[in-house]
Length: 399
Image (cartoon, rainbow, N blue to C red; front, top):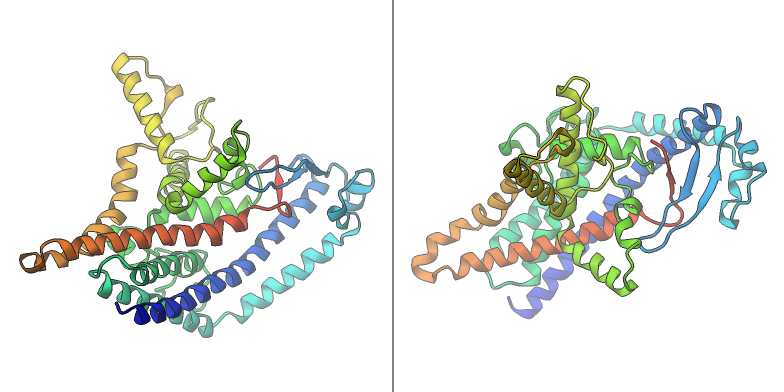
């Protein structure tokens, strides 16, 4: 590219990327309000039925720090629950907060917003889809060029929009009532086959696994120990590590460009496999030494697989060492479709020009795709992960 064209292209794509980010936050915030309703309802329920929930709640930590217990709800009403507690200054609102009023107002808001859903929402989604496709077409048509930030940014923005806006809101059922074509219906979206996945939402995560992990467990157990996206718990190993703080930050920065395939894909797949075991195996119980809530990464998966192989060879295997996620299934079912289609099949037509240009154009495209992948991981991390931590968020010790 001419440098001026590159700068103008970057400016345009950045504006689109910012719009996608704002759109993700905007609708995500409304979903977040729904989550808070559930959080509030659980608080109120815990006051009325202490046996259901321990009521012990903690301020959620940042990545590198931790906060202590913020309240104990063990009595029959919110006002009584906090009358004898010493609350921090930013928690005084709990003493006199109108929980019933809050719940009623949010319930009314939810009903009003649901009634307002219509064709305009579908039109807006299709506009987002069009912008995302423009980024994809631009990225594909220019990926043969030497590695450059314009192509990478376009490819990155497309991937981010397909997940954080289109797939996320569709899988949540946001358009089930308003999309008569059922193209953006949560039932069957990107699931059932590799072809559906490729057409509707192709990413590192398996859509079926993401639906279980995110839609069911994360949103219905928000902030609880059973929330698989509880970042404070998932990064506790790093926060509690006896190493200098700068090394902890280096570790986080190293995870940013690879977190989707290293952590999120295997962790969502683990939740899917556990759900399948519970559904297909009568009275199935996980071994006592198996932590169903522990975040599961590629490293953990291969460690478990190697451990199982060693036990089989030595003849020491047992039910207590069951492998929930098998590396072979994870690679073939989850990672391989995205890796092969995105990094090999997509740029493969450029190999037809090999007799003239050699493999230069093909590898230019591969490097641009890799750059776009690293960039979209960073974009998603900054938009998503950072919105799941903070001292103003609460967690529950039970689930």
